[in-house]
Amino acid sequence: MTRNLLALLLGATALTACAAGPDYRPPVTPTTAAGAFIGATTPAVSTAPADDHWWRLYNDPLLDGLVTDALRANTDIRVAVARLERARAMVRGTRANRLPSTTLGGSPTYGRVSEGQTLPGMDRDNWTIDAGLDVAYELDLFGRVKRGIEAARGDANAAAADADAVRVAVVSDTVRAYVDATTSAKRLVVTQETVDLLDRSIRITGARFDAGRSDRLDVIRVTSLRDQQKALIPSLTADRNAALLRLATLTGRTPHDLPTQVAAQTVTPDLAQPIPVGDGRALLARRPDVRAAERRLAADTARIGVATADLYPRITLGGSIGTTAIGGGNILGGGPLNFLLGPLINWAFPNQEANRARIAAAQADGAASLATFDGTVLVALEETERALSNYANALDRRQLLRSARDEAARAARISLARQREGRIDFLTVLDALRSQAAAQADLASADRAVAFAQVDLFRALGGRWDSA
Image (tube, rainbow, N blue to C red):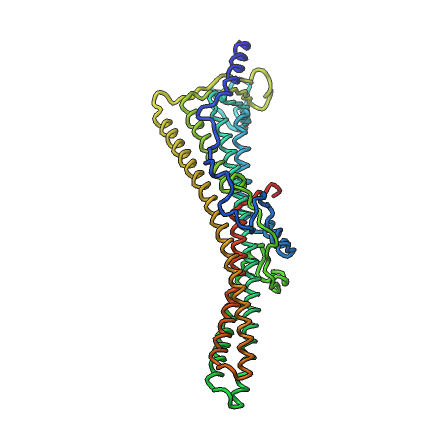
């Protein structure tokens, strides 16, 4: 009997290597997705492997510190990490199904039995103690437990990729808020310089008016232009304050705790080297949303196996040992002890329509996950190419506006000199000053757009966080 039972157990263990449902095969991406990017031909980028810690390319210690604070204290990251820990706990719980389950119970009761049920010489009032140990082990003949573990691992890996995606977003938002704060501060400086220039023009025009060499209308016009430029200062100040408040939230601070050196920073971070972008193959390996979609596809494929395994019998080997003692005496003696040993078979047969419906639902989930993965790959490539295009065009626009700013400043200087000499009318001077103010404002906005385009490109490239 014992020999036959042992042979049964060994045979069942060998069968557990088989698992119902399809084995997972990673999806194949289009061959064109692995090549170089279309927009990687500009000198502003290189095909070198992308840098995971890309914000360090700015060589800005203040920015490095803010990113470190955000990775440590940002609330969105804390939520994502907590969800990852939950998914890992679910993996441990699912893996425990491979082990025997044990239940230990005991029930001491005190009571009185009827006189007719009392044996001679025994008390009617007594303690009754029931105790037992139950052990059950599921023979995973068709891989239900194995596929369940695969699904749980896929979910955990997807949660890890989701946490990486949150880190990418938080770092990008932190750098963007820092750039927004510094460019707003820079635009404030430029606007104030324009106001100061117009103040000097007002003094010159007023002096000419007092000398009878200019019209009162000239003074009014240049004063109006000055006031228009000055009116931009409150709006720019509000933008800068909003960026600082956003930066405080991203780094886990209250508004009062933001470092003072951030508020005083007016230099926008810029890159002195081409941005390394790699190629399409490296992009798809880096992007956390692509990795998350692939892992969810693996998990949903495993769930097809879990549902398929329910078509077959579920065999559980069980055993129990227990005792019932009256009065607490001789509780471990041979007389009170009892035991049971045997298999338990559960099989929903012949009506398996519900199981087949669950299989069809799992297959539909797998098809949806595959479509989601394919779509995520396409979106990743699209976002990166669009970011490359926007960055290249932002650089071209800034270069043209920089030239226009220089020419406008030169024209304004010449116009003011000729106005002092009385060689041109004031409308020409006013137009030159207006053009200079517009050119300076456009260039400041272009600097901001270039910095934002850099951040968008880095965000599109994704990143790995193996050290997180």
